[in-house]
Length: 510
Image (cartoon, rainbow, N blue to C red; front, side):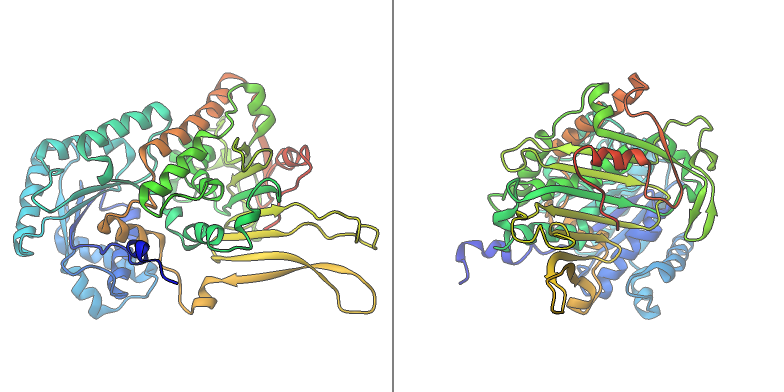
């Protein structure tokens, strides 16, 4: 039976025509993710009519040169392929604006250009600003926008900002950036993007938990033994990434944002409703409930960090982390991190969440696995081979988005023998179409004013509070998780296996 009081949740808010201004318009993010995402929305009929795109960057380019460069990359990476006729229509919506990020005159000229676009569109002055530049320019861009009045609303029209990660490098820098952002845009007009939350499986976690009677009652410490969240990458420091990565590391680059966000979706309580703040209120409660590893001794007992040395990945010989281009020969930056996280709530008391991220592992994959407790062994424990282990629910975030459930079944035959079997669900095959890219969903949500899949200020700061304790301990004491080593192409350092073994658990092999 339909619920007449929840009609607002059945149909999403409609995205409205706007001008999308991308700061850092000549970078890889714009070329490989943002513009292809907008193009794919057009292909699918989702892009609101009248959307214009203005690229803002420092390099000298004409509109035509800029469009040609975008087209070249779009042909390579577009999810839906590249149709010349449709691109010809799309490219006319794109223009380029050259300016230094600190040049007040450049923002004044941008404002005049946006006003002209609004007049052409019949007065629709909605504006979506995307900070896709290097993070060190965020302050300059926001302050210059405010001084030029680009953040101001005009009548019923809106101005919003999407801020790309990293959102700060620690708690003080995140708080500073939040202060600058909120001095320019209202919190309800600020969208801190985390593309992992735009992936289908991440969005499906709440549906899986709260819309299925077989899972909702057992989603707690009475039935769940442990939870694992793994992000494995087979790549190293290609493309000159070593310079950035060596200043960041796995903990700050991936755990603080992407993986803790996934953890919050797994651990949150049911929200009062599906509004943006209803969901984010529950997520921030999870972050506030994280047990803080705030001494070197606690960090040493609950965190493992490591760097890869030379080895083989997919049959190719690769060099070690410290030998990578732009990486310090004496670097103490982790390319691998494993953290035992405890969520001190009634629901999760005593259940460890094991979070790991590593470079140069055997394959690229991100998944969440829920490990249920084993049944008592009084019936089957004495049989040859015994019970084959507990049930495991796996949510694959990438690359093959889907869900699988491992259950125990009897092998065919006259004897009673048991083996684990897998029930598997794949998005692509089950629904007959590929999932949209994460940026497609998130850009559309920002145009619609739906902030559900974006991080709120307090979420970001609480996540940094947890991570900063670990980072501080690493800098204070060599005893706080000494740097370990693992061969490229392996599943990480031996010490990460020992971290789980100390509590009677083992990593799931992907």
